Image (cartoon, rainbow, N blue to C red; front, side, top):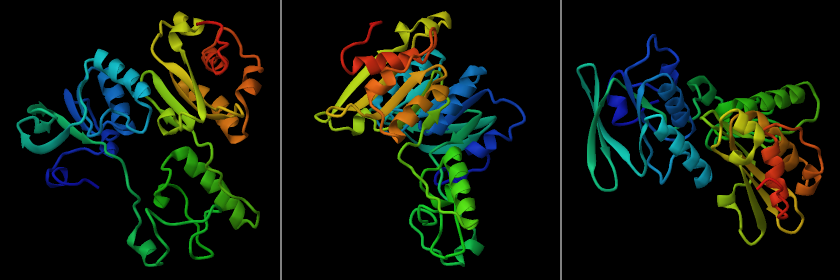
Length: 311
């Protein structure tokens, strides 16, 4: 559902409308530089559409560490994307062949005209009226136990309607848990190691604790650059890094962030480490194949103890 000023104007797109388009627009203004906005900016810029991206927060991808977001910022700028951070769209009006929008930054107001405007500022649960009549307990969405059971014993809820972690892969696992419980088995969701993936270029994938959320006195942070990886060089890729956040005392892996080609495929090593409480030494002792991008993870693990060989 759109909100003002966008809800008052016909023809403005949500992310759903993008998948219904019959032809590419010449230009787009994307309101919101989070995951959805950045993924659309990546796609449209790759196919030659002129893109303007506006984000209210200090940097695009505000839920990510700033250094990770900065890699994507630079990559999008190289592709010709105009990016406004700490900015907002204050007005939109239809004009011939598109929309005229006012962008308000820290220092000025700018006017831009684009063929399409896409609002990509996140989603909220869509709870139909007939479900509301059940008077289920609610918070951001329908409240459930870890077994996906609602406040009514025989009613279960999964996915975005819960208003929690709104990711397809989380909903899939919630569905499995709900089905097992309905079938009489004991099953519970574990959200301790949910991977986040962003299909930018390069990709971003993360799991567990991020550096920005960590107590610097309790963790060790190690970072290894993609530019030092042999496989990345054969792919002509240099942008990105792997970052490991480890407990300073135990060495347990608390979080991993990967900014790299194929990051979304590489993150499972981090998911398993975080979920099962593995240490950096345990992962480091596992032989990583060469030449592969996974060696960037190995380099970051080695760096926790100052042992990174290739930098």
